[in-house]
Length: 409
Image (tube, rainbow, N blue to C red; front, top):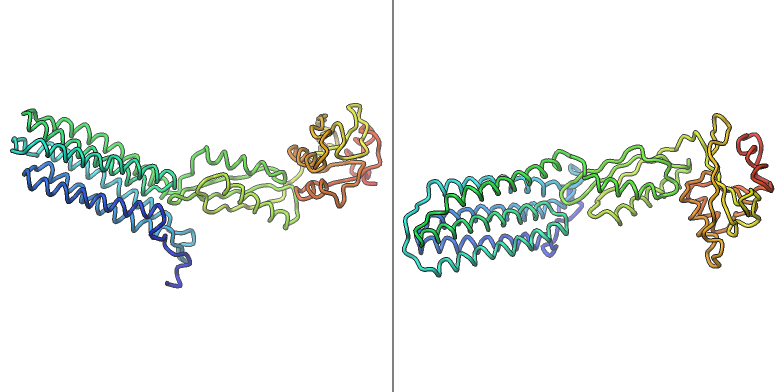
């Protein structure tokens, strides 16, 4: 293997490549059958349809080549050659345009004289319609499952083949009955093929030109990032398709200046995105420290009157207080109940995880959390943990607003 390549091509047993090989085999069968029937009947329409299927053979060969080399990476292409699939998809869309032209040309110039052949020819043509019809469903479902634009494009090409063969069937039936209907049918079907080709070409060019992934994927990714307690805000979030894969890049503000914690956070975000968003190949997370204009404190309480509780996990309520750093004033205050107060096992950790959903900067408790599970959980999320000897919230608030007053014991 060449030293320039650090990733081997997709093996032949990979489902996507396997379907590409099946596609080639089906097209070869269709070409052989249609050519044989055209020689038996002298049908120009069948011969034209055989040449149309021959174009599909070349498309299948291009599909297999594209699938095999799309997974390779090299120093010259560090992001891989995934977009080869989209290039193949664009080529197939152009072949669809060619197919539409062939159908229209056949409808305009094709012979309308009645040929001498039996109805058994129509039965065979129906079989030739059913083969690509069922295979296109199989190929499209596989392409959607693995998010492969090449398979989706090739499946659409098989659907076009179904339409082309249907035109042949209508033409042959019309010849037998003395009604040349194939020209009208050809014009209608050609419009559908042009529409399908335009859709494939447009989607391929969006990827090749690095257009963004759809909003649903970005919204889902944004929710995953914001669910991390250490994330303060998202400055930017972009995503792009490359073949069947997605690349995500984001810049976030983090509530820590500890590089090790920021690095661990970026790894958690990457794994969460890859686990919940299909076909993500790479996630690039850039962390920047959050500039604080206000601090959020959470204080353990035993009652709504503001008395501080002696133990962290058994606190009945929590006071959530936002302090403006510049004005040195309380800008908001809220009391929330402790939903895990009655829990016996793992209560402290559950309470810590509950408080982290409010993204506090500081948690204040009369109980020391040093060396305990809740303390580790809060610290790992970038939340400072303080112990105090103050007994009431009213005594504590002036100290929080005035950084000159120490809260720690």
